[in-house]
Length: 230
Image (cartoon, rainbow, N blue to C red):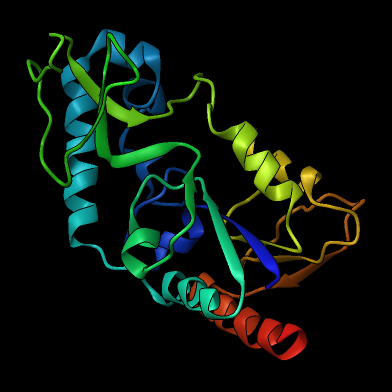
């Protein structure tokens, strides 16, 4: 069974109504990213940061996986599919995908500010100032903020290095270190990029572009891969 590694970004969840930071009308126009998604923002105003992520959880609870999420899950019937996502939502899980690595954390989890190994599943509940772990430390979103290291990137690089087919869905390939994962694909590994916008892929890699929104693009990709590899 061939191994497909899929790198997903905010574009795959946009059709589920999840706001992104960068798009027109996105979160950057409502919030200063340094105030709600950085260690400095957390140090300056914990209440604002917690409010921001409480709002994101409420939005996520009302969102549903779209055809791109379910299409990738359905590929598991034919391929060994591993998803590496930059997204902090749980829509891949809810669509039925089994092998998911969250590079930037997960909205439905929080962790201790005093012991980062203490991670809790909270679903869509609110987290407020004064909510603490069993060791007495304030809880914070289990999210990799701007300026923080990405602990899962080494695992992601290893998974990518074992791919037979590599797929990029809904990410601009400008946010590092995730954007650099394409460099770890084996020589000769087919690379597909699904995005309705122009994306500057590395010139040294042969990339097949599918210029469609995620839902339609994954459908096209699924039919192509099944026809050519099954």
